[in-house]
Image (tube, rainbow, N blue to C red):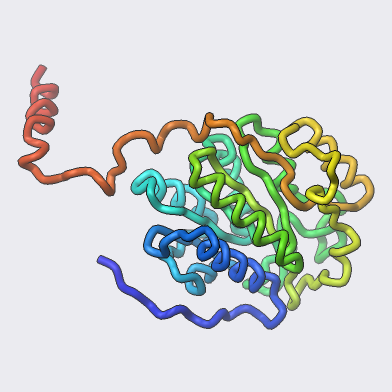
Amino acid sequence: MTKTYPLADPIWCAGCGHFGVVSALDASLTRLNIPRHNAMVLAGIGCAGTIQNYVEAYGYHALHGRVLPTAAGAKISNPELTVIAAGGDGDGLAIGGGHLLHTFRNNPNIVYLLMNNATYGLTKGQASPSSQGGFRGAEADLQLDAVMLGLSLPGTTFLARSYSGSADQLERLTDAAINHANAGRGFAFLEIISPCVAYNDRYEEWPSHLIDLDADDTYDPHDRANAFRTGLQLAQDDCVPTGMIFIDESDRGANGAESAAAPAQQNIDPTHNREAYAEAMRSFMS
């Protein structure tokens, strides 16, 4: 049923921000003592869609834009898994935008690493929903901000952003995201600004535009309204917040879909289920 493959060498361009993401993820799984046979990494389509080949864990390559429902299904099937979805901004915000919206709303206990390079890198650099104004026809001030989208929905429980050039922050937030989902507190969304050196290289620009909210002692990540207000204020100054932007650490968790007996752990021996089958047959005849 399964086959073990050796880890592959990344096919990303030298200097791609995605290297920082895979490094942080692998380090987090080790640091959090998560057995690799209890971890599953699912990827979308695009440059980010090969990350599952570079992490020692179960891996799955989902359909374009469909990584989130696939990851949620994996978690429902086996709640003991640490389930991490990963993908780019084109996969997650364009064709997958509807699934992101409803994953925010349904709040399953999974992690989503959105590797945002603000371009369709695999298909030669077209503008994506998150591209800055002026990049290959992208309209100014019309970028889709997934964190702000998440803040606008009352059911979200974890919204964070990091930068692939900030290794310490990225590892800390990856740890927090995995711990949040595994504690049953819901969907952990972590966007990583991950520059594309081939088509949208903004390494020199980003540091002056990023504001680390974790370094601000007055900022409260538990206050949704203030988080939204802060995002709007920073956008007016052409700045982007990073760090833990919003977190709900209550025990309300996900919507309960995982509370039923996991399909992967059910006893499907016909002799064990004979009475249930008979009851089902009787229901058709009543």
